Length: 199
Image (cartoon, rainbow, N blue to C red; front, side, top):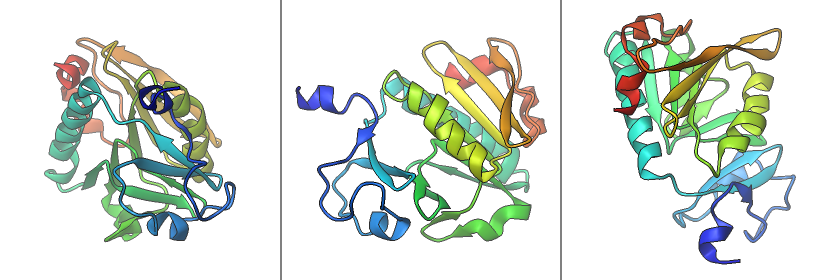
């Protein structure tokens, strides 16, 4: 297995010395040396994610730009872009590609991270992270009560909008092209066509 193969998917970071897998917390995570890798913790397991691709970064940047326009510049809350830590629970720390905290939840923001569930989380799927975004993060975000979750696919030019109801996500649909997003958290973004996030 080559180094490139080894980091093409999200995988347990078993080679990191220190805390045993299954027992990682934010405190342990925060003590990691800056080695340039992307780490997250799910259920106490330290995970390593592959570096994002060009299409991923372009899509994440445009989604951030439009959310900045319709949330932060509109005085509705704050928008953050990875890498920025979100401590969903002490043993669950993630770095969503983009996230929104509305004004009513700004007390969750501290200088080093967000503690608790954001109002909106956006993950830009890549071949190496699609299953992780669709299964592991899906369950984590639902478990802590993130009200809205978008999964963007830059290769297909689509965004799926998921809303939380009774601790489970319901899909409002997969949107593309000239469609707009039916967001309950950022309703004003409906003026933006999906294709604008990927052009």
